[in-house]
Length: 264
Image (tube, rainbow, N blue to C red; front, side, top):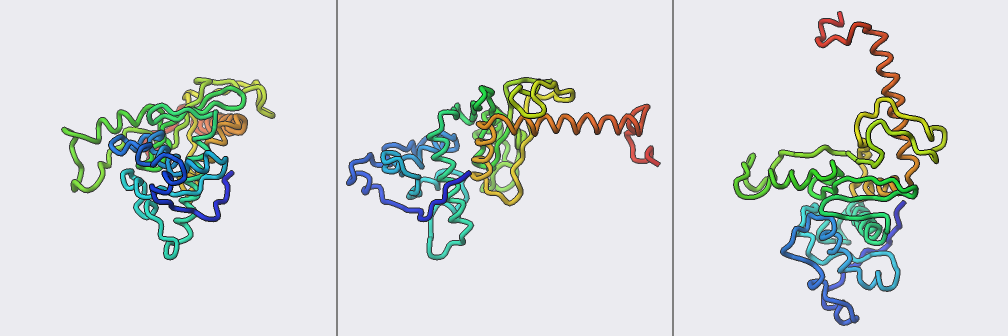
């Protein structure tokens, strides 16, 4: 799923000019909203112009601009001789994710929203939240930042801490088939069968515990593009919901109790 980058490099801005490339400063909107995925990605692409031109893996870490983003401080500046291997690995994951998003024709970016077109034509959407390192409800981050950032917004806690209010749902991936969808024909075993309990138009796909966000998101993008296993997962979740409801109705024919004492 990911390419191993054995050496992460850093290059001063003047190196690019000397090699006939554009000064990264001219390609990065330092005054813009670098939390937007496209603007964030431009930081990485600006420092990997040489790799783009030569068709090589991205291996050059931005010199300083990531301090303008909400990326963790321990990642922004590299200290190869002293930093833990986990930090080196996470930088590799970020470089791999940014290159994949930059190169893949299946991925479109609109504001915070990532839209992925699968191999069988279905589309999947979610917002990429760099601040919380989560994929969240598509279209929700604009409202979230309108309500939590800027003049007139109530600050919870000390002013140096971020606002803890969240106006989004984590782990949400919206799909193009709508509610009560029928499993696409190409999906083994379940193709052509209708769902029964799929009242929502999205899947809940959470990050695996302990996995870095860029690696988890790269896996999610591959899952959406592959456009098969994601439907199998969704359909099997629907089957489990059907079984759960059957058990509840069998155990409590007149309706599930609402208070713990009613279980006695």
